[in-house]
Image 1 (cartoon, rainbow, N blue to C red):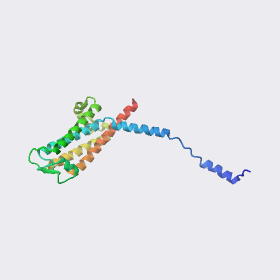
Image 2: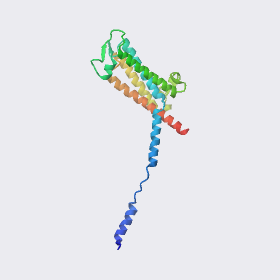
Image 3: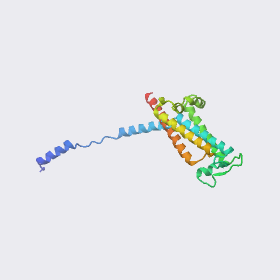
Length: 219
């Protein structure tokens, strides 16, 4: 014999249905699809050749070659001492420097110089893909480029102006300190300079990626 519900029970059930409706679980197929689409957009934005990222590689390669030249001719560690790059990078203070007795090439100079050449080559190759006309066109267009032009004009966006000044101040601080104190490898100076320059280039790179993404969506 079926059990009869009381009036109170029926009212309670109806009120629960009214104020606490049954939760409907939606399928996650669309969410996964949108996530995969976002991941592919981020991946293409990060792997797309960027003129700013290529510029960073070129400038980093030039900086490494400059340090190599300074180390060979006058010593980059301090006045009268040259850096042994392998010991310096690995943190071995005993083998990080030797007395500079004139122009002398050691294995560390060759390895460090090759790193600079590789960075310069990678940056040049990236410019060939990211800039019409390649590396030579980029060099000729530096005064009109985003980094230089944004120093005194906010036309490219206020974020780019901040980024350009971060790069300029970081490089200027490093060069001034190194010339005044005859040392080019001070870790404290590096910490200040690298943070400022990396933040500057990161902001420019994100701006480039946003422009390319908008262009792809419109096409």
